[in-house]
Amino acid sequence: MSRARSEELGTKPIGPLLIKQAVPASIGILVMSLNILVDTIFVGNWIGPIAIAAINVVLPVSFFIAALGMAIGIGGSSIISRALGAEDKQKALKTFGNQISLTILVTCTMVLLGLWFRDSLIPAFGGKESIFEPAKIYYTIVLYGVPFLALCMMGNTVIRAEGKPRHAMIAMIIPSIGNLVLDYIFIYILDWGMMGAAWATTAGYLLCFSYIFYFFLSPHSELKPRWTDLKFEGGILKEMGALGFVTLARQAVTSITYLLVNNILFNLGGAAMVAVYAIIGRMLMFALFPVFGVTQGFLPIAGFNFGAGKFERVKKSIYTAITYASVVASLVFVLLMVFPDSIVGLFLSDRADLSAEDQATNAFVRENAPSAMRWVFAATPIIALQLIGAAYFQAVGKALPALLLTLSRQGFFFIPLVLILPLYYGATGVWVSFSLADVLATIVTAFYLQFELKRLVRKSA
Image (cartoon, rainbow, N blue to C red):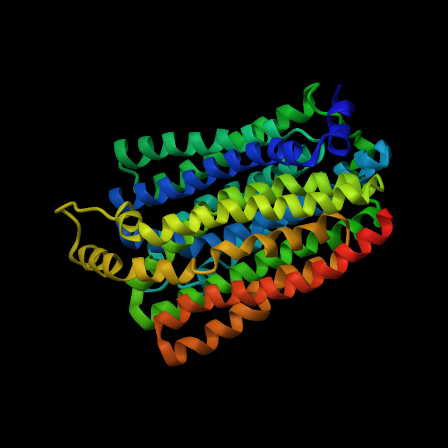
């Protein structure tokens, strides 16, 4: 039965198949994004805007370590999808076993290093002055749970590679709901402040890990690695590393971006300006969930059919994914352009007992965040092409173009822009850099993808 489910990736019509894969992925990402969004709203209303800035400082470090698991997951899942398409079950099992071993080894090492250099990393990412202490509390507790998050990110991509999007969705929903419930208990009822927010997040990681562990032990999964599969194999590690490096490089550049933007904005407007960026950052994670869902649904379809030599289906999956993702991205764009003030207001509290600093920060955020949000999301309708294009090369095992396209937006374009434009236009230069980088990266991706589509036409002829 499980094998039949994975074979659906190569037989069902692309449109309905993409919807079947993308809807659960979108729901899972939606719930996870809502978790981050509502978590930030709770923190802003029950603790204060400085706490929002503190969490924004911590995210790059914890996300980078978690991204190690995602990188190993996506790199290995590309191999698994193609192996299942080529009916090479043994290679799929060996790859999954190597993913498990590598994720545990690498993330635990990084957590130890992250704790050792804690007092240096937090200020480097913008955790200065009033932001430092709450950021340190949150950072320390969350880092304990990050290895479990990394295993979850790795396992979730493998579940999708098996063609089980519903279970992948459930794995994302469980920790999100758990985190929100525990937020209410730890922050609102028990009044644990930043410590409560951190423990709620860490407990959510453990809940997610518990479900994924159950899935791979259950009859739902066709991948049951043996102890011998956990032993590293050079060829698999090399291919997995090359493909996974794309994801890791993207997250590394994202962490560098947070470091730069947090520090640039702190120098321009202090903690209040960092709070503006924190809110926009949450919206970047939340608002584009359907686009990311289509991208996640597209990956196993492209990988399986490429491995099976069905190049016409690969080409059709690219066109269909770009079309679907562009439609939803345009809808998101309209909402963000029309309602930015209402969105920003959700994160801010009108409580009379807020400190003078928090009240001043709230007023600053209300005034500046809506216009900043419009600039950041100005290019949203065209980003689908860039995301799907980069994802395609990763799905079919072409590491170099996948790496170049993944790094193009933030690495090649955004970082230079954000270093230059604020010198002339202040904070507006920071916000404009986001949309300009989107436009430039989309142009480059379109150029690469055009040549690749011509190759697929020749192969399918």
